[in-house]
Length: 139
Image 1: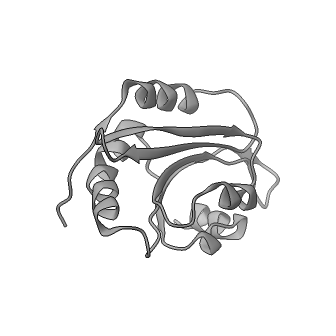
Image 2: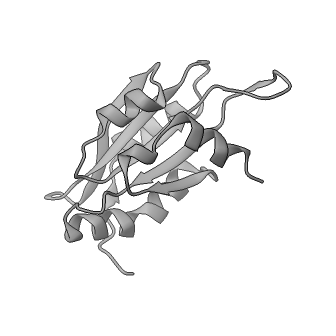
């Protein structure tokens, strides 16, 4: 599927870099969106101390978003890790042109973020802590 690839703003590149090297031990989300007119990926918002359920409430119901999420994960043996993942949210009922812009830009943004844990969701209801834990523990 070919789609228009949008540019990634310098602000997004800076925020991704800062987000990746943070030392906080809290759940945080960097939400990115496409500015359709400028064909540019830009920062929607950065939210500190946010649960998956709160994140679900923050996202628009009918517009795609990219989410970089840092998650405090307590393992079965009580070790704590802070995996960072890239979530591509594209609602089924969003405009086809917008879906194509997001899909066409996803790989470039994923490469810029340099994250290997990459997930896609189509429905906000899927975005739960259980869903995240299940995906993060898959080998």
